[in-house]
Every structure is written in C-alpha cells, then in structure tokens.
Length: 115
Image (tube, rainbow, N blue to C red; front, top):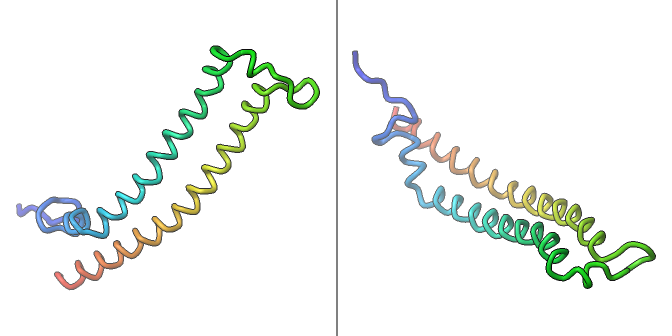
C-alpha cells in the first residue's frame, strides 16, 4: 500500500512549503513581537501590587479619594490593563488573520498547481 501524501506529511507538502516561507516566518515573528512583551508587561504589572503592598506599605496605604487608597486603585487598574491589552491584541489579531489568510491562499494556489 503506497503512502498517501497528506498536507501535513513532511517532504514537499503544502505545510512544509508554508512553514518554510518567508511570509509565515514573518507572521510568527510579528506574533511573538506582540505576545511576548504584552505577557511580560502584564505579569510584571500583576505582581507589582503584592510586591508593593509587601515592601512599600506606607505608599500603598496613602489615601487617594476618601477611604480609597493607592492599593485599591492599583488593584482596580489591573482590570483596565486587561481590557487595554485585550483590545490591542484583538486589533493585532486582525492583522495576523489577514496575513495568515493570504499565506493560506497562496499555499492553496501553489498546491493547486502541483495537482
């Protein structure tokens, strides 16, 4: 029984061509350029609250608005940061989706020529 050539089976398959294309590598690099800094920023921002509460309690207890102190505002600001990062990612994901659709269309055209 002869081995069938599927799109994901190595060699000169569609996936192999896509994975080695400059456009695909550029897409992966642009995703990484967004996701890695955003993740690092969020993790640092998230853990800054307990670190500041532990190491700078006088600063975090400073009253800002009535009984609301800086620690509460910082904690609430984390919700805003999540929404901002989500908005930025959705905006970037639209570009990623357009690029991946173009790459897939080119791969489909290339594989159609091979048949």
